[in-house]
Length: 178
Length: 394
Image 1 (cartoon, rainbow over the protein chains, first blue to last red):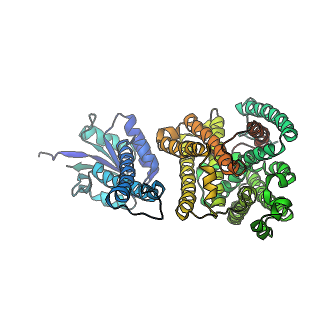
Image 2 (image 1 turned 90 degrees about the horizontal axis):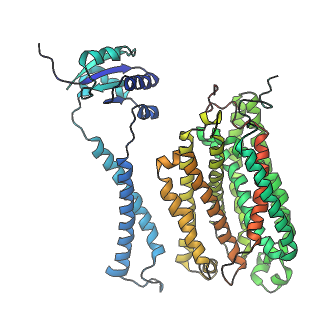
Image 3 (image 1 turned 90 degrees about the vertical axis):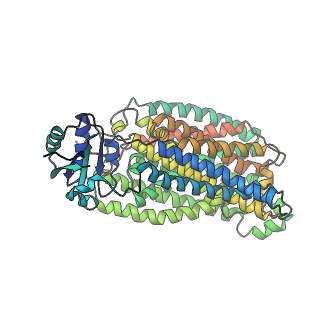
């Protein structure tokens, strides 16, 4: 019988501490390509997985900068060039009154960049992901914690990785079909 | 013998760098006091105005510490547990600051034109305001403010120390209740105190944002002061195991928030007064954007907001104790410049000027204040002993 290609091997845990310990041990054993799944965010998990994303913060900063310059330019263009109005004898280029608009567009563009950039970098929306082929995974949004070592890891070996995960005292270990 | 308060695993080691800081502070303070004593006789009014600026800066650290303590008791967070003893030591300088109020109380007629009867006789607006702006009521209010602050600080310190001896949930609850009322009292007293001591330098002018600007400034200067102190502590064990980059990250984020809050308050007041352009409001800004003061304003926008805002966005910088301490020390300097810009133009109509007594008063008050702060810090364990955020085995 020819076996289906694998996405990876996944272990199930019943508490976040066990998950963090498992990640640390997996990294110590030399595994690098893995992902963790939990019902709520756990700060220690991102640290244990060594996830330090520098792309999104840079994008948000550039978004904020664009919003800042764009907002100020918009206010300047409308008030000075496109539709100049004398307001109480003030100069047309009354920059203090442009600052609220500048602030709002800075926040708006930075926040929009953050949300859209997050989705784009995560590859969301994603209509299919192999981890859902494992029946237990339905509990990942309720009360169970999962660690999946992926097949693209150079150290991945179908049997050996499975045996390794079983040493971590998981509730269950399952092969994730691609 | 196991008196947890007298000797604990969190006592300040006898050879800690803070002892050197304390000795240096005493020298700086002594030199400053000599300068101030000369100044009292040589240039009485210049001394009083220089004194007021520095006084407000260091009073602000004590009061800001009190407010941050109370906010932390209500909202929680491990960042507050690691700096609690630093904040408490700063609040215990408040009785000393009450004593240091004496020069202002004695010099009230030289400092404030509304306290000068000859001046008031020619000024119908001040006659109208004299129901509030008169010397006995001014001094009575000051007594009330200090009673409120010292009283709040007393119980915050007392109950926190009792918690070191025994972890009692009732104490936590009591501190929380005190903090609720205490914050309300803080907001009201700071509003009126900043009106009395700062805004009334120009008694025709008024702004409802003035007190809030002082509160934001006090919160900022508190974090700017506590971060370098925590960095000094975190240089060696056992504190280095507890005051970690995670804590500096949190403290740095809070300092960034206060940098933005300061900019928000400062711009709000400016925008409203600039837009309305009313003859009774705008002179305050005219005095501060002319004759050289406009360059001080540019420095403030740059050093008090733009620069710290941009560098504090960096996660790596906030987690690096020394780097974030440098930003914090720059911000303390910016606070001083801000207070100088808020208070001094009131008596410098001819334009920007700085007196030799300005650094002298800063040294006198800052040096003695810092000396007192460290001596207060030494009297207790530097970290709370029974806080869930502090690991027991460290």
